[in-house]
Image (tube, rainbow, N blue to C red; front, side):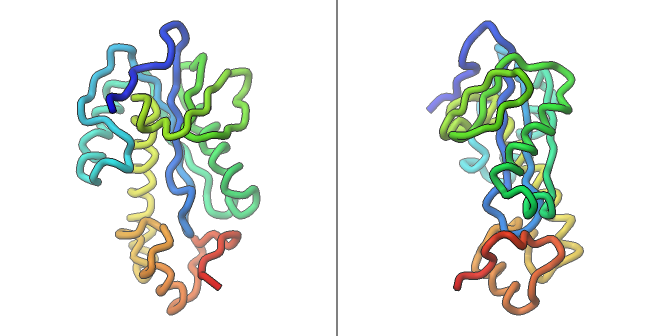
Length: 194
């Protein structure tokens, strides 16, 4: 399915998406992206449908061609304090705060969002596979988070975050059994099955 360039032609739109919501460790990242209306990037798609190599190719192209873009995160401690849903909204708000151009409409990936200032928003289920700006945000959020988890892997190599990025793979859960939790794990999450 071809991505739509925008949902309407009058207002400046920012696409927003997050990465790392389901992880057992590390922060949740979010990105906000405002694209020009005539933006074209044939490879652009939902980050989950792209290979790591494709995402790495697209990231600098998005950053060069976007009217504005920003990435922000909420760390594991804040996630444990306010829960992952609120942390995802907060990460998006922080990304929007960093934009150097004010959007007039927000396109949010997912079915829920916490109002940002006075800016109207639309929640779009699987929006990263429907709108170019949300797909672009999904790629930035994912690649910046992956980079962050690679750095954390150097500090805590036993959890293999260079491969699982903090998601609850069998190897990651086995490492928690073998070594216990790290200071970066989300203690409010069920890290191991009962």
